[in-house]
Length: 115
Image (cartoon, rainbow, N blue to C red; front, top):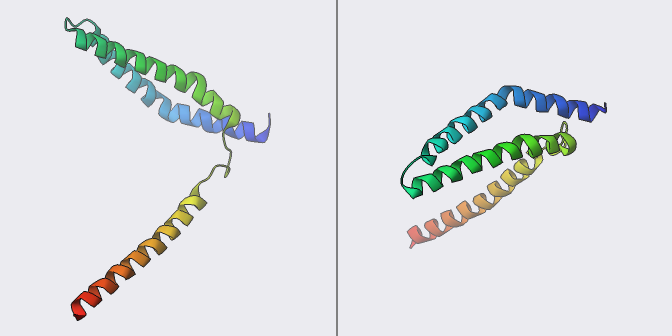
């Protein structure tokens, strides 16, 4: 197996082992609440329960049937897709912009108090 594919496999397995049970438990409890709404007499609650159950079902199938396998096939390995540089440049840009705004506000305040 290619090294990158092996790395992606191990990261996917780690994620599923550590977060998979939480995702499944959340899906089961939410869908379970929706199932109890299906037997209500008021039509609003029946439709709401159906919407909840179907949303959770489709989300569960999408997550474990499409999203995770596609990340395994096309996901970034190691530093590929790392956005750390982007946030650093964004932070520097924001600091320079806010620094200019702060300087402008201070100059206006100084001119106002000089009058």
